[in-house]
Length: 344
Image (cartoon, rainbow, N blue to C red; front, side, top):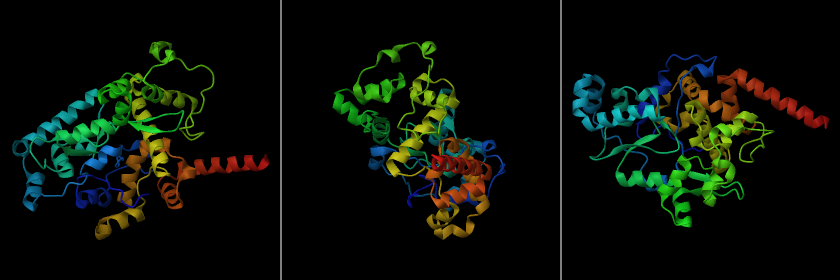
């Protein structure tokens, strides 16, 4: 795990620590029963042009006011932020996911902080990720948002293994970035977007697109990680999917694979020991129970996309401690695979 990983782009360490020092009620025996947690996702070249870490300019009086003021008075003082919060919640009807910690306006202000300047809007750091969550959103001006829309989409070319950004493809094909993004919305595959043309099978109505015969395992995903049905889903363009669960699965799978290709390891939250090192000055306020609960929220959707054999030893120890049943199944599969290999 890179040592510079952050849990929030804007929240100060004290807000992060509350997650680990005060665990909420969660069922540790069943990770699938807890809510989704989030983590920073790298955003490509656009991320290099913006400041992801806003300084905490709030005074103690400001924080005290946010924590104690009546709801109506809070919204009167922070009208612009309230409008942004309301707009964020309304996007759930369009498929966006809002983290539970941001549902309440007061919590939203404490975690994201008030707008640092006039005329700014709430911006998802990575436009491919549908979730609004601490560490995934920031206040941005129009120029920053335009940069973000241009470069956060990436496209993988299966013929060469190269990855292209929206702006690079637009320049190579002499079209606008909007034209590239429109192809993604219309369900074009990455290869079709990069080549600039659709193949005949992609033009068939969705009702006629049925998987027949064995699904060829894409070299982009680790062999054995996904079922044939899941691979068929991942082979489709996102615009061809209708269920939010399928869209989220599709996005998570591609993000985890992108992280493997870029970082050379599995996408995981920091271990308890890593977190103590990252937040050394506040280590006394971090509890292992809080870390476990925080991890299990995130693990709910991350688990299907993690290759156990790729984990570092310390990451394996964390998974064995927090989700022993899943880890035992993975180790049994590893053992069976090794025995089969030895027998051959």
